[in-house]
Image (cartoon, rainbow, N blue to C red):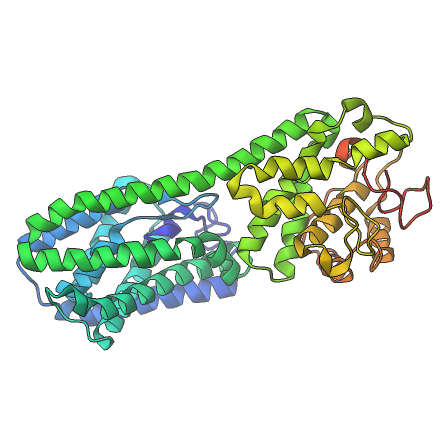
Length: 465
């Protein structure tokens, strides 16, 4: 469950010299002010009405919450993190009510910030506190509306806890995603998908039931039972951390494989990263799901993996290839596909690696697929790969330049390239929504693998050599 994730996310233009909100947009300042004002007003209204239970129980619960928050799990490739304290929040809502639960979370956030981040920016801590007040009070309202009440019958908690958990998760994660989008740019929906979507099942199937169990244990046994169950909660944290670590290992494995490709020749360095960047930008512009975008990202890094099976002299040959050499060169998609097929987490990238040299008119390789027969992800990679090649210097010619590269892509619409993909990419370039490098190191070991298509043989057309 995301808890205090913004502490790891810098606000745009944040610096002590220029002030915490220097360089931020009006939208960012408005949203920040709205959350803080709502949180402060809600706290001022409901906190004084809280019915204080025995201080001992509250202090123990606060200690459990702080202990959970002090063991964050950093999300892969993100500056956000989650903790397992949400299970304690759900239980607190059920047994103490949302007001006391919000008070416990407020103090826990402040204590955790002081212990783990002695120099934590006050405006970040304030935003986190206020967002959690809104989150827990909203979740508590959902719990009550669904018929929730303190009970030792766990079956009576199923529906109220589900409503509580869904509300809590959505308010918190979308609240953070929106502030990140306003701070760093981008779509809040996309940020939420990349950062939190994959944690949904773990949260709803794992932490929400744990919260219900903790509530029942407290009502049956009291604080000692909750203290013993905290061990189970930490085991759940450990299991989730193993899962997040595995995702990080997957990405690092892909980058390591990319480095192995690049190490074969300095001309290749940076090509896979740029192709990945362009391909992901196109996929997001075409509104593909994050699951498909992740497959494109992995495939972008590994699309030329099969070239490790091609003789080095062929890859670096400055002149024309013989027919036998072309046959060898054109085997690299199949070699690469076989390599990635051996790794379960890369199976979604296999078709992109295999088909990224297919042409829209059916004259590509290895299978001569045409049009919609070619997976969309492979058609996207095809455009990204060709664009980077044309923007790169080669041993036998300089970069074509941006306008010429765009012209070649447009000339190839419907023959070499999918027209929809070309249009999406050209729009990104024209609107300056992507960055690109002109005259970078020669891509593909100085050689593109398709035979000349748009331009006549021997010219510097879209496909080149």
